[in-house]
Image (cartoon, helix red, strand yellow):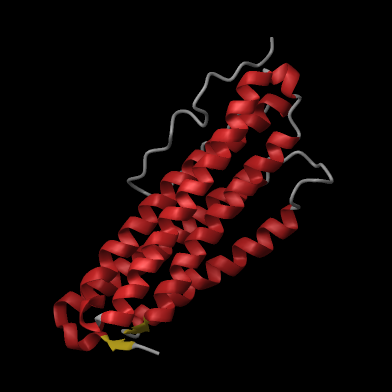
Length: 214
């Protein structure tokens, strides 16, 4: 296991520790955002249960909390980095599953068959793109870890910053889309629970105009 005692980085280490703690906090807020959206679900047998959603998100939240503890003690390692990237991807996956389940409950004829098909396709494409981007970050970090350990510190901050930016953008899109689909089915107003500070929520959860069928 490669371990770094951040005391050798002096002031830069303090900045890095604060940065990683901030990422952990944003991760917790994202999980909370998804949980709020999941609570609006339609109770269908083929949907992921609210209990399962909560259990899974709690598992990822524990990773974010552990990261904060590790950085507080100024001693983290490469496994912490991969755990954090995995937690980001896991939280994003839950938001994607919620949209897929909500779409399965849609009357696609009433919704508009062409709009529905494009929405399903775009949701899948968005996930594939996000997952590939996170996998690329993991692979790049792993390559540097194997070949040149001295560059790990320089790569750590931009890797984590890129990961949280990708995750916030994807989760924002999926949650907005999930709530709009449910709003169509249930006639409930879309939730306006806040995203992490400084993050602008997408105005549209779909690449096409969504017809209510009225």
